Length: 108
Image 1 (spheres, rainbow, N blue to C red):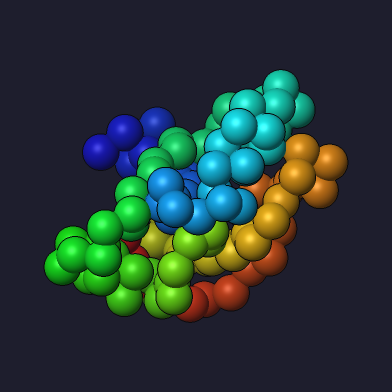
Image 2: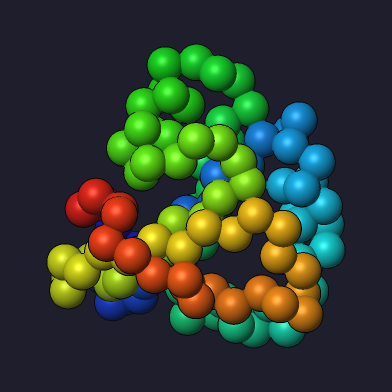
């Protein structure tokens, strides 16, 4: 796995095409050069939970996510530490990766 090999933390973005905040953040927040620079030391993954199928339900349950928009941040895999940050409507101005932390995420 790339994150473990590179010793980088992971940000898992829960996204759905019907989620207006997700679409807005995709077009503005995650496209902003300041945010892209802040995320350069992370491995970015996106879980498309557009369809409410078994796979979407399983990954949301695994990470304790009710639905999008949400981001889960975990420390580098080699450290085995877990943290989560949930972002509801971050803008480029107030985006900070993994600024809110808890031990809610399972090992990935």
